[in-house]
Image (tube, rainbow, N blue to C red; front, side, top):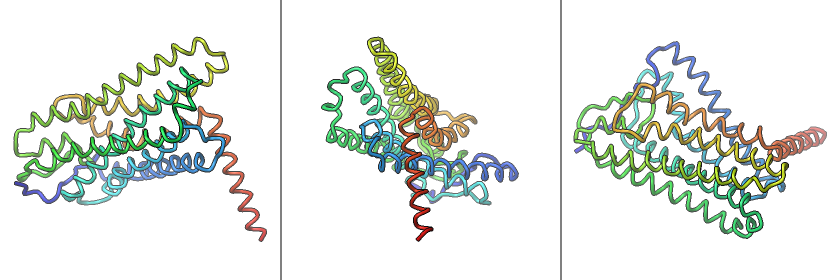
Length: 310
């Protein structure tokens, strides 16, 4: 039985002045997020120098970051100026599915990127054979399928829960634990399932990723100083992104069915801040990407000058 047709979102704050300030800040952050990630996608797609599997996966990660942020940020931003912050039941389920779909894809993709670095550094002679074009395409397909399966499992459990009356969500997005609190049935078992399907999975994959990077660092002892520097720079970027993504997810989902006031701030971090920081992390520490961006910019400037002359 479901008597709820829409949910009321309390948002980040009830203070009108703070809402206006956050609106201005978040709309700038969202623009930078989408622009920065799409710039990486375009740069890698148009540069022959960035044809290795690592950059193929990086462009895919940037695309996923743009999509993941776009499933939650626009609604949150415009709700900051709305008098009544509501979302339909179907809209809430759609947002929940999209959030976990793109989040699941990104988790698998970060694992794939760690595997790519492991093969490149620990087994360099087998790298081009192992990470061929077909293998890269298969790994991306696995990421899509895994994300879809993860989100489908989550949504199938939530959509059948009865919501009998209370419809106020103390959050700015539809998320699992706030929704479970509104259900008019015992959701203790569901809470444990969420902790296992989301939190435990994040912790397990995070542990595997940390272990893989430890093995990579250990294998660098036999490399030259120049090779060590390049590998360390690349791995440092990957590790930073992994930590920024996984730590908030583990904090939110690997616990009993309780919510904390800080949950909103953590959600802002992984929906707005992390996707914005990823392009900066990868470009600032990677001379090849920076050089490709300069070439892309100079090419556009030359084309622009030629068009103006015509």
